Structure formats: C-alpha cells, structure tokens
Length: 176
Length: 214
Image (cartoon, rainbow over all chains, first blue to last red; front, side):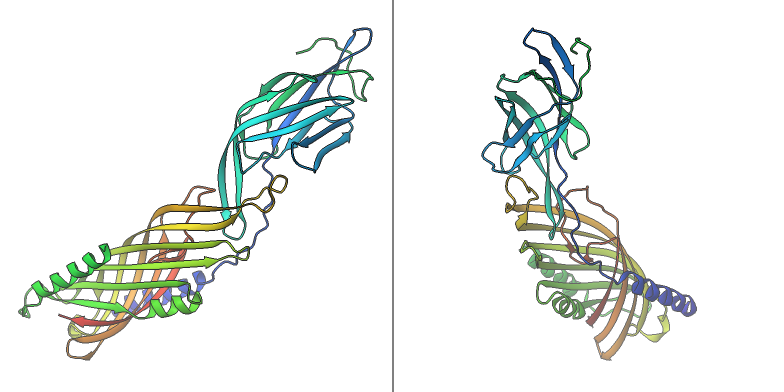
C-alpha cells in the first residue's frame, strides 16, 4: 500500500508541476463584426435603356452623425462591410451616388460576446428591419439576419442609378 | 448567512458525535481542519485581490476510510490593463473519500490518498469592460452586473497528517484538480473558481491544515 501511495505521490507531484503555469493574458483580437451589404444596380440611360451592373463607381457611404467616411467616391464597389452601433439598436448610414443621396437604417438587436477582461467584448447583431429612402434604393433584401463576422452576405440593395455607365457592366437587360 | 448555518451545522455534528468511541467500532471519531495555506498563498499571489478560505472535516471509519466534506468561500477582485474591474463572491463544497495507508500508526498520524467531487458557484460583476466598436464609439465601456455561474470539478489528493499534541494535529494536502464544466464561447465566465483557482482545464493546489480530532 505504501509503495503504491509513493508512486501516486510522485505522479501527482509531476502533474502539479506541469499544470502550475498560469497562462499570460494578452489581447490580439480585432473587431471584425460587420454587416456585409452587397449591391446590384440598373443604370438607366437618357434614352431609357437599362443596363445591369455588378459593380458601382463613384459611391460614397458614411454613418449618419459620424465624420469618418467608409466609402469615399470609391470605384468598382460590389459590396461593403458596415459596422453597426453597439450602444443602440438603430444604425443609420448615408449612401451617395453622383448627386443622388439615400439614407438607410438598420434596426437590430445586439449580443455581447466576451473575449476576456483585458480584451473586452465584441457585439454580434441580429437584423430586424432595414428601411431606406428611395432616391437610389429600389429594393432591399435581408439575406442573413445574423451578423457574427464580415464574410457572410447579410443585406442586398438593388439600386437604380443614372448614366454615365460605370466601369464593369453587363449587357443583359434582365433584372433579377 | 448560509455560510454561518453551514459552519454551525458542522459544529453541532461535532458535539453530537464527540462521545468516547470504543477502539473496535467502525466509527473512530472525526476531524475538523482549518486551511492556513490557501488564504495566505492566494492573498500573496493575487496581491491582496483574492480572499479564499477553506474548512475540511472527515469521519474516521476503521481508521482507514475517511469520508470527507470540505467547504469554503472566496472573494475575488481583478483589475485589467484596460482598467476593467472584476468582482466576484462565491462558495464551494467538495465531497470525497480518503484512504489511509497508515492504519497501525494511530488515528492522528495518517498518509492519505483520495478523490473529491466538487461544486462551486458564484455571483460576479464586471465594470468598465471595453466594447470593441472602432467606428461608432471607440471609447465605449460597459458594466455587466448580477452574473452568476456554477462549475463542477474533480480532484485527486494526497495528504499527510501528524499529531502535535493530543487531539491536535497538522498536515498538508496536494491536489490535482480537473474542471469538468465549460462555458459557451462568448460567455462572461468568472476567471477564478472558489476551491479550484484560476479557470483552466487543470489546476493544482496545496493546503496546509491545523486540525482537531474529536
């Protein structure tokens, strides 16, 4: 019995030395929670011809009440990752193309995701409703309500934009 | 209040069973042990932010088998580099069995090996936790109050007990602890578990007891 206990004691002490190290706390995480908004558009010429677009030029986008511009007259835009507010449940952005401007709001719920005391927490979102003025925005589709990264498509906007014709176009007049 | 009731219950049982026991009966008395190492070690290690106290009692059966109950509580505080504050209060209990290798050495001198199953629960608050929101509100901080969490863990223990004077003994335990419960990702979990230590899959601990044999 004593011999057995001696062996157990030795094994236990060895195990204790192995597990005694306390991991150091560091914070290497980045906030990558974004609502991915994808664009499709029809460009209407003066003659009334419609051209379907997969990318948009000259697009400007910023958060309402925020000086920081997310898209600044950007070219070949097919999608954009938008940060939603973590301190309230309505986030509003302004979308501008040429002289036309739309305001759109996302109504969402927030879910805190704790990382650590040093890093703090992310906030995930669940989209409830998307509403927009209709100068550019023709239709809105919510593809995926849950926002937990910046990879998955969440919302799609179909825009009606005036000519001139942007860089990347297709000649198929059919709009889906 | 609950802690007081628990301690009073243990002392009441002590009074009831402290009558003289025949040498050949199964029941051979009981021990009450106060842990001195944990409060000092945790206070020193945490620079005064963790207060942890433990009390153990066991019953001697045939001077070989020792069903054991251990109780304790802990108050923890922590300040992160980002000035976020954690404050938690909780308690634990452990039940288990020790087997002594020194049956013939008398009831006061023992070499134990044993196991424990333990439950720890606590309530905690977090203050000034940073919310990652670089675009809208980079300086945002938030409080999380009234959180609670329960954990289950197991232990393998080795211990020694030696007689100092009649009825008074001292000894130590070495413990290898394994946490059985896991939180969900993104959950605000307490970083310190009463009776277990810092939250990680395995831990180890040392107790240094002074004890009374009844």
